Length: 565
Image 1 (tube, one colour):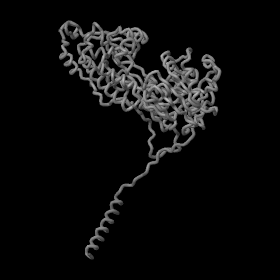
Image 2 (tube, one colour):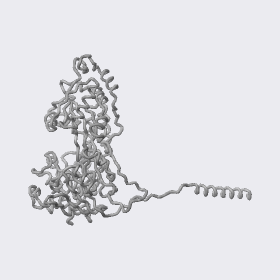
Image 3 (cartoon, rainbow, N blue to C red):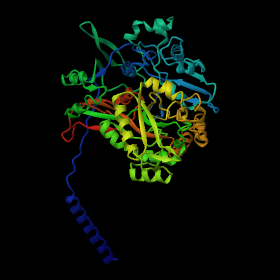
Image 4 (tube, rainbow, N blue to C red):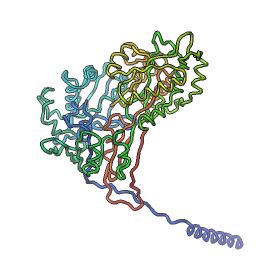
């Protein structure tokens, strides 16, 4: 026992010595302290456009008004970058089992900037103004609200009764709430002309302070933090928006020290912005999909019904080259019709990569042969593989259309280009199904819910927006079920199945999703930008923005480029 105890002591001492030596060999570790958020400071941004009316019922067609209203007003709910609904003025809500009744509970501490509480009556009043016959919102939106019963159950509870289940209903509840007591007794027309639209009263994190007037012209607006905001107050005390006629003027304003941010960075100033040492560029996917539609039920172009032909056309199209050379790289490749980065997107969708040799082989296997005549166009059953492609008559779409024509001509496919004004392209040619193929942009602004139903369901082929006339019963069943089921997991499963069917049948060729660029000076920290459903979604995290109290020596505050899928 005595010998054994000595062995234990020796082992312990040896371990102690080794431990000390190991600690001595460890490198020095320096703790890096990040910037410390502090309350205060002024953020100024250049907006491209003019102020009209700061009223959420009147801002439908003016994006710069919606930018300001994002700070001044708040809605029942909001959406995160994945398109998932989040509480805003409403802190909770419930949905009936049949999906036709929605009850919302308002926050008890929600106030307007004049100190009055936000009530269910304010919500009902705002909806009445939206659906007023004279309202400027689209007729289909007015018709939508006209079919819904809006019932204030108490001062803080409101109920919506739908005529039938409609899962995307939450999309329609992000509008800013007006203070009914301010507009009490006014007709819609009187509200339009009210001076309150230039001194807005909302319930958002910032309240109106003053207008900026120079030489008799309105040049900007100042907002200040609202101390009684129902959530945590913003870090930044004051927001100043200044108005400029174009992007170049906005960039000059930044260089002159008038602003710290530029609301939109387009092709005109992108390279100059990237060269600015103190500007950080943020990029997010826009709610737009550029796509090639085929008239699948065209009586004279039956070859469009051949799935392998459609896949060959996609395989023979160098979409990345188009993005790099005609869009300055400002787009993301699209492999489906559901936006990436959203809760409904299926990232397992097979990708069809550019491979013209495989495309040519696929066409040959389908019986489309080169005859040897001067045209070089493939023929099957005495029918030439040739069709017209209509596209919007502008410089960018023309360049893209010409590249598509060139790519497909290399496969032995003849494409005749036909530029059209966009309203003629959609309202006459697409609606009337009077086309062979079409290069278009599907814009789903302010629609976080994916809901591909309007464009791809069988029922929409006649009188709807299923311009391709895609007739796939399985895909339609998935879309129809996903429209009435409110469980997000189940809807996600249905949309995943839809995307698999779409990729297998490929009724149209997805091209790309354009991106939105936004620039802010390096001094403004905490900025994050995900996929956008509207341009003002770049402000989604503005409550977290701040100015650093100090600049850590270890921190690198060089300009950055952040891209969201």
